[in-house]
Length: 498
Image 1: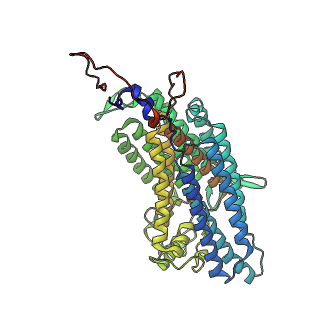
Image 2: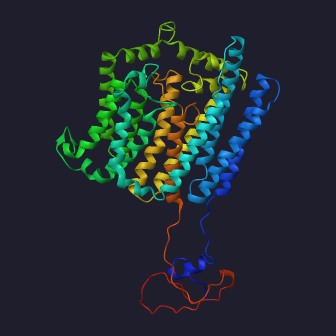
Image 3: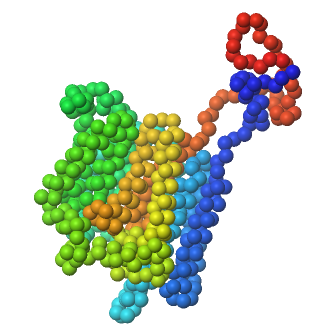
């Protein structure tokens, strides 16, 4: 007698008997989190050794805070997103930890300068730990409240409206309540400040994903044909055009080039993923180039950014000139390939070294090799997010996961490209590395949504099992199944024969 073929539906009961659940890979995630904690701990020790020549209790405090926060995050993922990708959270933990190390290292240098000048100094690293704790609270809230990412489609237009209002709000407020360093992107409240644009990008991605799911066919077949391109009807494009107009207003009134470029790039990518038509990308880039040329002619701050980009040494001493970019490039050149070593460089010389130019400080002390490794971690994080977006079963999840993953890549490209003088400087933060509460809070919400989509993609589909009169025995103990040979000329279903 022969055993049943695995192609036989009835035989699948034996092939998976006893039934085996798909591995959640939470053990892998825990091991990778431990590895990230080891790297961060070694980085703290190196900074202390190179700065003070002795180890202080501050390392213990930061280390315990780091371990405690991400232990809670791991337990939350294990409880509410058990099948999520096991590499997303460790990548975030490593980036956040290295950012904390660099902020602490800059605090030590600034504290020494303040002591020499006999003035008070407030460290930023403890605040960063507090921001991380608050960000993880939002991270847990998203995992608990959003049990299925598809429920977000119900609030697509609401998210779009709230996102556009939050994005435009700083432009409508007086400069005393919204302007910092020439950019009106802040909302200054009693006791703290926040950047609404960081949260707007997530709300707008939810809106764009739900809108494109509902109107996908209209972008492909409806409307008039212009130069061989079938354009949708204007009333169908209305919400998208309004959102694009708000993004342009951000550029005009808030002088925030980075957010405008980020949102514009995300929209183009999501539109391409939804329609698979490159003409939309070409059209969007054409309008973007035209808008940049017009902005260069109309706004002096755009002209200044371009002049700093072309030759930062020529505008080195000018107000708002190329001093910052030039100092960042000097630091990168000093680091070379291998870097000066953590704690052995001078990253504090660069203005805003713990926010906009934190990658310049990392490049100086870790060198080209270290900075490239950090960029590879970002690439790995975005790749795992894209992989989850491809694997998820619903179109909304695919578009939203793609947008969230690309947002990380786009933001890193914009800021690192500006620091290295590849593109004009735009002044946005580096995700998870830079000091700042708004960026951390928003990006941990982004990661929580990615984990929720990843959990849906990897979670096995629940199939109803036929009722069995008794418990099936394991395959090794199962009896041989008796089957009949099909009659001559019968079907060719590939059933096994005795």
